[in-house]
View 1 (tube, rainbow, N blue to C red):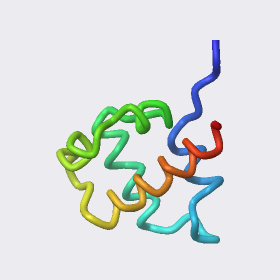
View 2 (cartoon, one colour):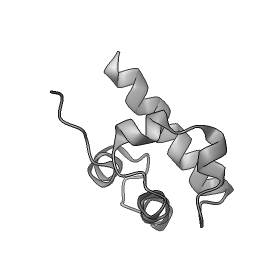
View 3 (tube, rainbow, N blue to C red):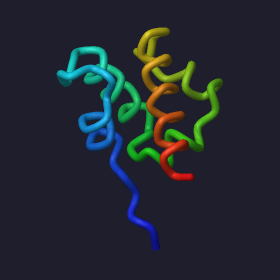
View 4 (cartoon, one colour):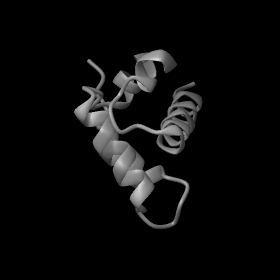
Length: 76
């Protein structure tokens, strides 16, 4: 069985900013509170579902989708 990568670990390592900035932390916190804890959970979530996550605004949604695309491209 493949080990699932935790959302927080992946974002911390691969976030586009050189620092672990507030937008990244806010995005992670919102996603985890919304029940999305691993990168596979994020990949399985539809954009519709992500827009319903509390405190996940436009910028955080953009960050989540960027990181999801990055993760999916690395898996191939």
